[in-house]
Image 1 (cartoon, rainbow, N blue to C red):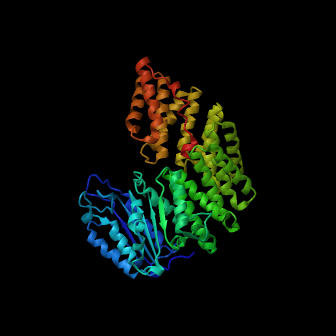
Image 2: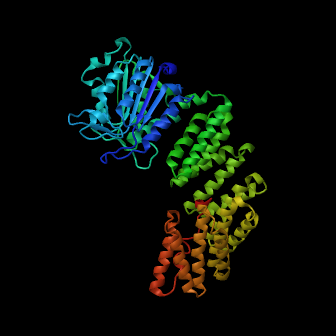
Image 3: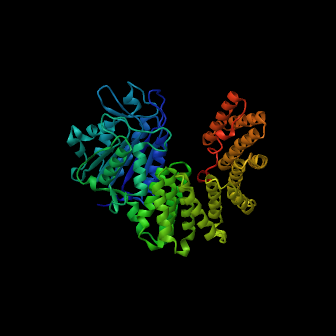
Length: 541
């Protein structure tokens, strides 16, 4: 088992993302496939192929421009010749496979596409010790026939004693490939890149071609995507394509290990911001798996654990999220250097308890955060979130006077902090809710107007949501004050301003319900939606 000799190897990456033929839909993900695969294969953590030895051709329409690229690589490769293609695979009337190019046209495949049998000839005649073909396209399993399934001797056209070919395809001979709309990569190459970048905890130091095949087959089947196929000869299956990042990372110098871990945590956070929490969990799990036994990486592991717990709650895996928060709190509570992670875990726990409707427990956790960390300026962000959760829990427990006091405490403490305005606005809306429950409608109206006036022009999603909530509570207060016409106007404003914002579908739906009641009864009925519209701190904090 070994890595290829980079300077004596040649890689050719071919992809077609745009097609003139209407029968062949465009595949925008292919361009990302090529760009990122080249980055990984030439990166220092992988096999470190020299960039000059890695040629790429994306959306090249003329087959005649690609053949010299393939032939040139085949002629000079001594150790490894790797050819990768992503795009549409098409079959002629005799069932022969062609790889699509931008001008590929039916009945003209021979002149407008890459003939798989010609690729066979180029690769078979190469003097490279190992030859690898990776196809991410429909019907790619047909490549086995072209690579020697019917004529084993065709693989020995070059020097027989060093021949070795490994073919890895995204589908079988009769199956279309899978390219989910909107995804950055096609399904097969996305899983391949994920493995090459993140590694496999249960694999050895190097990721061999067979290890890659087994991993991809397992992962893609679990995602209901077509399972890949493979065919290897001689010792090609034992050739490693890259180092296993999991094993490689464990042996880096401390500074590099820390940088690698923080980079992965940042990637997980970015995935979470994009709503891709399942992928974020996988990234955090990688950090935990690699570094959990490394004492010098405690901070990075704790950070990954906290963010993994948050991702669990966002996925609705509340009990798993609670267990992970408790694990962090118990494990690090007595470690002075880990108190920020402990506070963050406690706030996550409070928000998760809120989602489960366990408001008494949520209130207890919030009080622990406020009491334990209120005097530490570095913890104010977590204390602010705990205060916001506290105001919500008090309202749900119908302790409205206490809720108002807590809201006023929070508003006074953080009103002057630009970074905490989303929580100040939430406290104001929570206070408006409590005032309404106590039938102090004039005060409710005043605070709603304050939120609307001060935050209406702020584009951040959290503050837009608070303005929408304030408008609905304002309408409720107007209705109670005997101003149904003005209440209807505000409801209509909510619908007009926020209907196109999916994140605000709930306030819009409640405004529509109130308007329907108004048309039937002549008076908006605020109690229809008051409890449903109290803002959830878990969503904004």
